[in-house]
Length: 167
Image 1 (cartoon, helix red, strand yellow):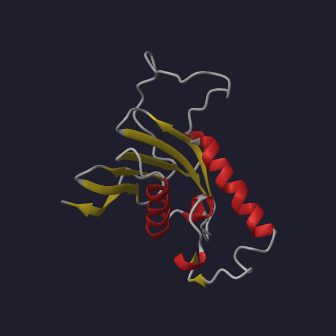
Image 2: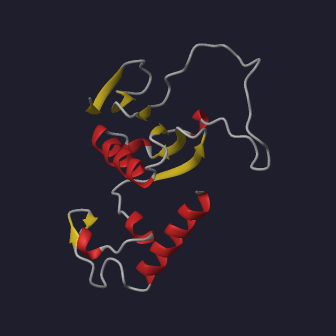
């Protein structure tokens, strides 16, 4: 999956620098290219965002769950930007049905081993209460519903839940 994502990004950048997207005949509607102007294949994943974010982890945990971790610019952290990001990630990761996306706004929120290390567990981790220094959000897509919860402001445990779809 990681290679497909990198290939899609490379293809999009190549199309953009060659002048094919968006100024080479693709019609822009709002912030997105019109569906008639976007061919199928890798370019269907190209989308222009008005904010910065970076996908740091995209793992298929099982046949039914995919887990993605994202870093988002703290200044861009808003309900509308989260909706846009989650919609994009959901569409570009349709399988498996179960999807969890966690968005962080500060590098200190990541537990990142060196790139050559296998996954890590936490058998004897520090059991201090969670810190709320930075905002974060978690999105869940399940067969029966789709929703996300995000921290309303930094330094507060208060959160808001947004239901996208429910049966």
